[in-house]
Image (cartoon, rainbow, N blue to C red; front, side):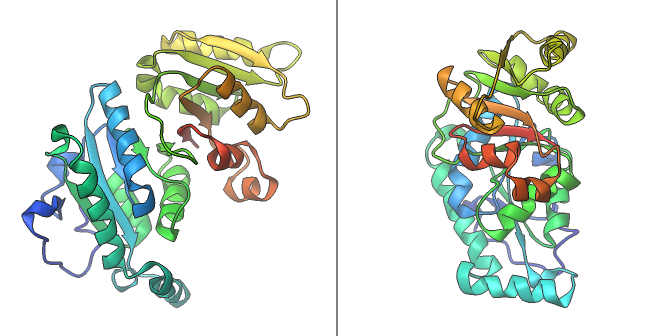
Length: 300
């Protein structure tokens, strides 16, 4: 996870105590990490770090941390895209200022526990798509915000649709901890859902409790039967529950059920109908990302 291939202009390294590492120094530390906390936006840095720490600890794995950000001076793009990025400076500050706010949030978080002392922050700025690829392509799980500044929204889209990563998004509200206390899987027998469950197997196996939720099952019970088959194939223990959404949307029914069983995390196959169509129609993924009080794990 190096920014050597995406930053055209060399930068002076910050003081050593800042805990920031640059090209050539990070790859051996982070390239094989199980969980990556991707920090494009300082506003969501702390919950991303907390969730990534819990996710890595749950599987006795390793954690890495990286900042990504678009920088018009270090990217090759259409003039319109560069102009749009430069206009951000008025509202969000320069790329350097945005990075410095993320770095301060990371350092504040590190002070909370002695066990975090050895964690370092990688910084990749330039073309955002290439930064996301450089930082995340070998990581099993990426914790990243779905809302926030432009970098956050663009990075989230790249992670799902270009990198096809297993992504864990912080909740709309504050993160309550106990990530894998009770994972609820929103199940429908299609490739996106099956791929998400398979990719998340290590975390599902570490969960204290696992429930597969089938909303509006077919008359032949195919949602429930395929859910049980998948659990058996992956060697997972869990309950399979079927409910009807009634007058509610599927997203509302999932969140109501999750609340009733004290869920701590949701897992879904993301954006079955495509990102922009879901934004227009208010489909399940978009609703859960906007309203869930729990972290949402997903894969497209």
